[in-house]
Length: 266
Ligand SMILES: NC(=O)c1ccc[n+]([C@@H]2O[C@H](COP(=O)([O-])OP(=O)(O)OC[C@H]3O[C@@H](n4cnc5c(N)ncnc54)[C@H](OP(=O)(O)O)[C@@H]3O)[C@@H](O)[C@H]2O)c1
Image (tube, rainbow, N blue to C red; front, side, top):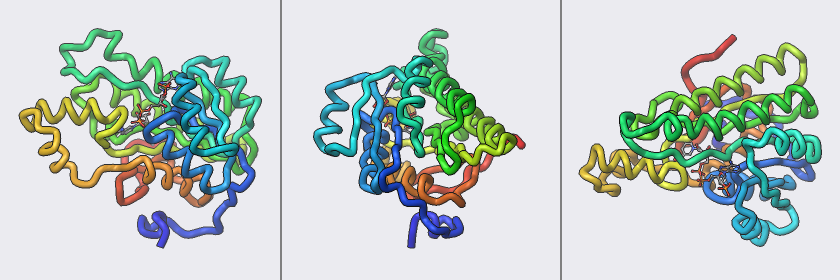
């Protein structure tokens, strides 16, 4: 049984990604690397974007010719336009995200509080806007990686939760523009639950300090199983290949994708 069938999603003929282009931001490590690996395994040629050339080179060494490394800053609107014009991906995964400063609210400055607005929201705005101005081919999908914090809040990471709620909103607004203009492009956001790696590592440490006397292992026990990069990659493949996955947003846990509750602006 597929992940979608387990989640009650109707099964449909799968789209074949063989020979298609996927562009994944934040592909140099963490969830983004898992997404790049899974899309390559599904037959796509993956363009991986991040700032650190060396880290991208290591991903390329592992994935071979199916992976093209592009060093760029996702907050640069010119890079967004140029890369979308150059590669015209059928699958676009906006996964890059900033690591927030994990401090209680009163220990933030406006600059630290707004960090994820300057990266995560700026990325969603620039890249998704480009896909509406110069639409991707019908049948394409844009997957915006938001966060479970967009629903649950995240009291120790400043503006992270609100920024990710805005990423979700931007993707849903684009879905509506796509529908109204008959573009045939799906826009979906994914809200992964907290994991102790990458962006989540600082959050786990901060919650452990706050709620478990600094005992990270004890805090992790309260979460139960946590997401792996492989599971996030599988979720991206499921969304890219199953055109009936039309919800505006999905929660992502180790059990797979499930429609997210919350605002559905239409
Ligand atoms: N880990 C979690 O618990 C969790 C939970 C929910 C949601 N998420 C979301 O999932 C996404 C990935 O998280 P992760 O934990 O895998 O993070 P990670 O391991 O820290 O990886 C972040 C990736 O984004 C890239 N990146 C960051 N800023 C960039 C910029 N300005 N331009 C280009 N690339 C940039 C990084 O590469 P460079 O630094 O080389 O640029 C790296 O490839 C994020 O959007 C995060 O908010 C994570």
